[in-house]
Image (cartoon, rainbow, N blue to C red):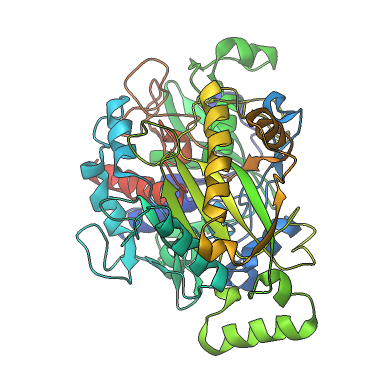
Length: 540
């Protein structure tokens, strides 16, 4: 056999081999298996947790985060811009990927984000090009619009619960001169309003559940959880499959037609590098022979950075108050069981604001998510006093990081350097973002509820003091992307049809191919990439 692969490995063959059952991978496998003549196999390292209630219940995201049950448990290296802190990067290790465990914020970002993709070299990915695929994958339950889908598997809706704090947040934004947004995923997104979430009947609506689960009975689809990808397999310049560690030992999966790598912004570059595709000098340091010198693999890492504005408030129905005793928890559970409403029907945030913070900004450069509780860490749970917070998030960071190998062992987690706040623009924007949030908090509707700003707190008064606090306290919005970007230049590993340049038979389809991070949460964009990949493959 080629590659000197272990002769004892069990050999499986299929037409299309999809490596990774995350947001995009589930879409691809489900769509391709609609054609009964196409054999599809989907490989996933994590389990298929179809019935886990904490995945299904929107508020369960916090419990999943704290437990790490379906988490790869990645951490960055010590970040120079964050006082040497290492940041936890949770990534979903389960059928459905990070979309099965995230905070259910369902926002596409700015239409201009995708025009910028096309301008950067991802030709054919402008907003008008990708809009049909956004619509294809969703069912929007709000007011009908030409921008929204009506019969796709993923259901999206505005939050079904709005606490007094969330209402005051939106009213305060309006008092600041912001507009009430009719649809954050419509033609324009600037302003404030209730959060949109991917929910159906009060339950999480994610690609594993809504795309893949209904397809499980198809004879031409094999869903193979509990299998870790070791490396890709080749015949000459063609990728023919992957070596996988399965429950009973090594397995060799071969594809007659196409291999699709959908292991995410961290897993995809790691697997490529383990397979000899990456910067040749770096690969040689780990004793890996270079199959394809592609220095853009693992480069261009982007992530949204945030600072949480935490407030102690008057009693106003915050989750902090409700979870203090057993009766509050029971009331929340009863409300959710009765009509799928209340705090348990909410993911990470109840309301949202996109605002222009820096002078001369042509569109919103900061996102603010209203969260009806406060935490120091999710592991510790809500604080023991009434509280809520705004997450002040940078829309389009200039800082860039890298993913690289720690060793040639697939079980070794890769080296993640996010380089947060490396760019001077990012530092300035985050400082001004905190100052904007403080002005927002002084508006009447919010000021009537807020008793004290806990973080950054009054000790962070000057710009230098605010930046120093951000370095000590800021963190991630969990949106890594861009590490195998698509484009036409030599540093882009993937072409605009998602084909890995220099290797036949290998497509990359997940958040790693994004040239630029969208202005908001990236799950809808990842789902759209899955739809687009399936369309390319069907077209041949």
